[in-house]
Image (cartoon, rainbow, N blue to C red; front, side):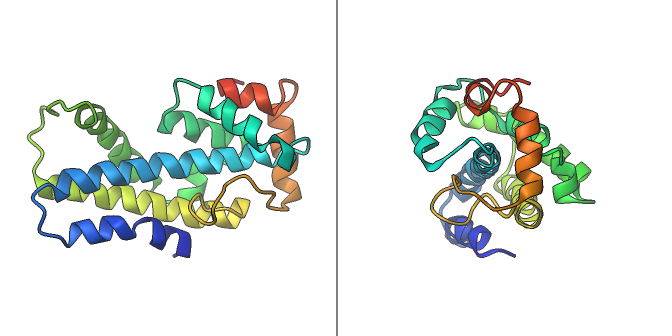
Length: 191
């Protein structure tokens, strides 16, 4: 297990062992934010691998990603596949089908909870904490797989915008971004 993953989930671990009545919903929300953050950072790191991207492009890349108004976990899952030719299924491994169903169910709950609405499922604290466990496992397995395949786990370091020095990744990203280029892709996430 990577140090980035461990550090990222430390706050969730602290909440889980607390006696806060809201620890179920609090850890669920925080875990979901970390899942989306990891997927976004892996996607941004992959875009940054494009051979025509330099350190001078970091602000423009952040602005392009920021200006995109409709990003979700599924957008980033698709971006990882499109940019690298490697699916998140491949990165996570044999637990992917189960975890994908769990993450998709969590996303439906997230949509309600983040907007202060009832889920309609009468989720208990224990049920939400169970969902946190599924999200955690997804992030841990994705972290390990992405680190091996791309040289970045989505959690480590202070930025995702660095060159990982993997020629095969650069080649795949350059091919995926042709002919639109990285900036257009970052603004639209469309092929």
